[in-house]
Image (cartoon, rainbow, N blue to C red; front, side):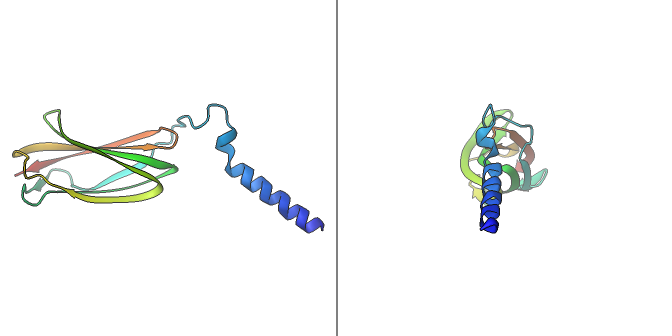
Length: 131
């Protein structure tokens, strides 16, 4: 009987420790641990053909779950395209291709912003050229 009580107590401690964030004052406030975010594609100064589109391949991780990814394509500080994806994942890969057929030739910048469950923010950007 003592073994069952000990096991039950250990289980209760483990469960309550896992819920630590729920009992902290200032529940889910930023803690300074930004999500890890990597832009795998496009690569720095990559040439992109209008007819082929722009491949966006992002990987990342965060201990507090990455809640959202926001993508912005800019040309000369003007937003050309912007979209957001909800994730709710610790580790993720996001792979998509966006049409660039209406984009004029020139240099662009892709800005990716990840926000985790504690509202910590990570940003990465990369420049590419449309031909």
